[in-house]
Length: 91
Image 1 (cartoon, rainbow, N blue to C red):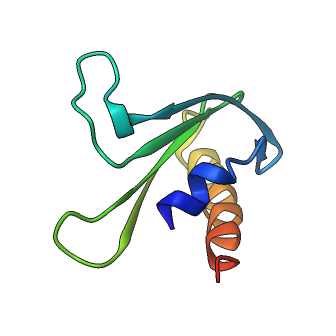
Image 2 (image 1 turned 90 degrees about the horizontal axis):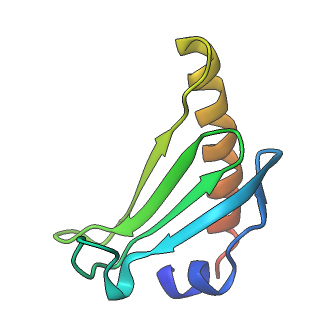
Image 3 (image 1 turned 120 degrees about the vertical axis):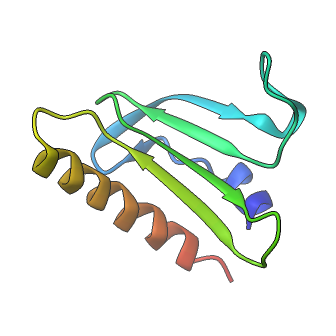
């Protein structure tokens, strides 16, 4: 799944442009190499995807800085739904 995601990085997510992608596979700055990808969106949100180190599953992390907790949760929900839709399309 990580290989598929690396080959199919979206250019937009939940109506926001993907501004920056960090693939940690070879390390990044002071962060050691790891199988993780982080995408930064133009609305200030970001999300990361990585496999679990101990279980056969993928982990997702979502962050949004909005004007209220409710708006941040709504933004995270939109991002999550779209990314899970992409991931669920992997055969």
